[in-house]
Length: 133
Image (cartoon, rainbow, N blue to C red; front, side, top):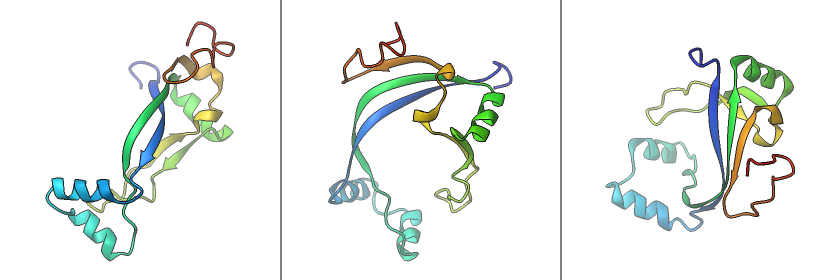
């Protein structure tokens, strides 16, 4: 971030299908040779298994650019927060480092560099972002 004065992000908007009946989870567990120690610990703790995503449909890609000042301003304005995953754990049980979480629908337009639509009406953003779709 310091070297380039900020950070660029590509955000992919997707429609997701999830493993509703557990078939994908069972297949995945079999493929990898059984449950991991982390998964077994979750079960012992009474926590549900995470829901697995089985397929994605890319709807659009958005390119953003932020400086550290922008992100700090975003925390103050509420379109981002800087403590996402603070209470979560990694697979080895250690606490995760907190991360920024962006509220994509609330990010000010000044940070958006490009929009590319897939599988939707290509003119959907033309009025808001001329020449970027």
